[in-house]
Length: 271
Image 1 (cartoon, rainbow, N blue to C red):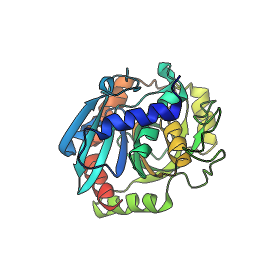
Image 2: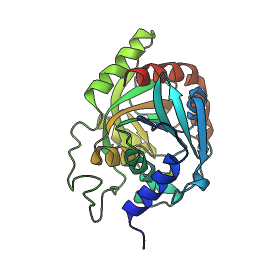
Image 3: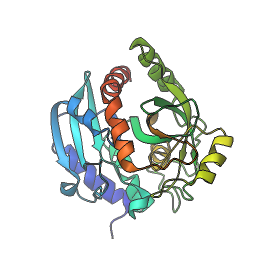
Image 4: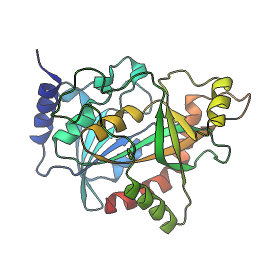
């Protein structure tokens, strides 16, 4: 039976065989934000179905392929469509691509997501540089036997989101004439949206945004020694009595795409 290390190496070897130059920056694109892959020059696209051991994304707004090429002079690998725990995948599968990225030599990771705004100062279309996260998924991608090949048994998450990259993201936004927020991202399993009581509780806790992804990938990335920067697109906000729906999420992501693309390119160019 193949081990996790065997599977990661097999997937990485398959991808590597299609490339002339190895990528240095990995990117994970959230709901409605896959358009950024169109910014890649000389792209090579590989469907998840082609890659040994890769799961397949099943969520609207997540297409399901790797796009590899150049962006702002950097060699990038974009995970266009992520896997979520709520789809029924194991945590090992959810973070599988992160480990494959590291096996390819990637040490810099840019994660994005669509998130609900808890902070009352946020409005739909805002961008939030993630300063930290709270894991309330009830599980962790590192549970189980630890393979030291990937990382230490007890990784330090006190600086999971690289302080220098966070400062870079804020600086790039200011240079583009746009103010971004910084805040704490709350990770829940979903797929149901939060109850009004839960959102009131999260707001009292001082959390800023909530979503159903990102936290597992960041934990796995830090575990294997990657530097991480994360940005949330605030797609809907907590208003007592107001319901949330996925269409609202995708519509808000659509509205912020032009600035999101400019900001991302600026950040990547300096990572």
